[in-house]
Each structure stands twice: as C-alpha cells, then as structure tokens.
Image (cartoon, rainbow, N blue to C red; front, side, top):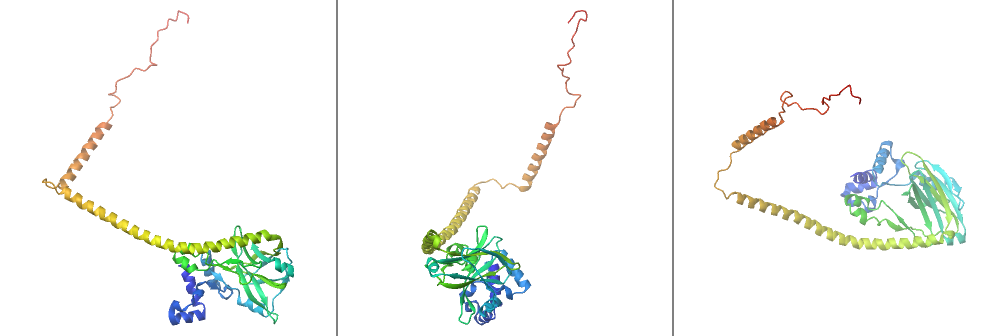
Length: 350
C-alpha cells in the first residue's frame, strides 16, 4: 500500500504525468514511470518527512539528482577537485549537494581498466555520478549509481574494465513485487542490466558524489583505481556475472513451471477442502439415521437436568462425608516411644 501511495504521489506531483492520468487514467502513464523517482530538493518539509517515512518502512523510493546541481554542472559553475589514483579521500557532503572530482588516466591505464568506488561507514545514502564533458565546457550527467547496503557499509562503484559489466537496480518492478510475493523472487534479477559505458579513453574524467540523505549530510570515502593489479578479480567478476545471466534465464523458465504447479496445487487444495466437507456431511447423516432406530421416547431435557442436579448434590454430600475428619476427642490416644518409664536403682552404680 505504501508503494502504491508513493506511486500515486509520483504521478500527482508531476504536471506531465498528471495530465496523462487525467486524460486516460493509469494506462496513459508509461510503465517506466512506475519506478518511483522523487527530487528531494523540490519537496517541502512535510513531503520530505513522508518520503523518509515510506523509505524507512521499506518502500524503494528512487530519488533523482537535484535540478540545481545538474544546471550548475551544465553551466560549468562547480568546483572540481583532483582525485589521484590509489589515494582515498574522505569527506562529508550536504544533502542534495555534490562534490566533483577529476581523474586523469593514461593510455595504458585505460587499456587495463579503471574503477571508481565510494563507500560510507555510517550507512549514508549517496549517488556516484559520472559526467561527460561538453564542448561548451559544461558537464552533462552520463551515468549514476545509487548506494546499496553491502555488509556493514553502503557502497557504490563504476567499473570500466573493457568488457560488459552489469549493475543491479533494486527498484525495478517494485510495484509488481509489492502486489505479488512470488514476483519479488522471480523479478529479482530483472534489474541486472549492463552499464552503458564499458571503457574510458585516456584523458581527464569527472565524477561526483551526491548526498542523498533526507535530512542530514553524508559521510563518504572515494577511491579511484587502475585495474592492472586486479587481473584475477576481473576474471572472477566476468565469470560470476555470466553465471547470473544464465541463472536469470533459468529462473524465467522455472517461473512458468512454478505458476502451472501452483495453479494445480491451489485447485487440489480447494478440492481437498470440498471433499472433506462432503465426507463430514455424509457421516453426520449416517449417524442421524442410526439414531432413528429406536422405539424409546426421547429423553426430556428437564428430567435429565433434575437427575444431574441430584447426582451433583449426592456427590457433594459424599464428598462432605469423606472430607469429614474425626475430632481430637474421638481419636484414640497412642503411646509415644519416648513416654517409657524406666525404673533405675540409685543404689547400683551405672
């Protein structure tokens, strides 16, 4: 329900989507718009509070980069700090703001592959952004990666390894998963899609870290690496992502089989309940027929009650007689072992 409410808010807060909804309902809104995207910088305090509440309750709300940040980058009005290879930088960025970094790589480093990773130890939400440089000197957003929980930290990374590398978007099919519990499993890998850019050319490239928290600043560390020392990791990543793609195709086939078996199971369960009810009804009718084979008049309810009361009274009287204990006067006196009179002759020594 929270996901549907947020989806509705996403439509009503966007003039274009609202116009489409008013003209032809939900069907007029494109399927892509079901991915809940909110610009937190344009929300008021109350709406931001509701969005934070929905996110805390597990609604995968997808946020967008502030239009102000994108406009400043496009106009070239941002401060860019150099990011040396292999040297992590730790900073704190305010909510709905961004820190820009430039990385320069050589031809050899470009061939070996390049990785940029960001992580937050206090589990702050952030976005890792990559910008293309325009001829006018401005920057246009080309790639973005949302932070995700990995162990005890939140992290995001971009991998330019000269072969297709995949990213996993957890917000894909979130509405369908909310309505169907099984869809949360079968659609889990639908967001496993390749990056649009697989390699970088030699030269200077611009990245940014965008604070995506609702109310507080985001602490992070950013690191740029040449992939030359990580040849084994490159091979392992390529192999495991190939296995994930094969598993996605296998799960797609398994879903069809599962749905068919589940439909049969539901039908058999319904028939089981009906057959059980029919058997109980036949047995009840049989017992009634057996009970009708008698010439004795039916027992009156009042007399049985009187008998029951009488028997209860008798049992009470028996219990009182049983519980009645003899008084101390009626009890016979018993000799105690220590009341023994011993005659001792004082004249004889002991």
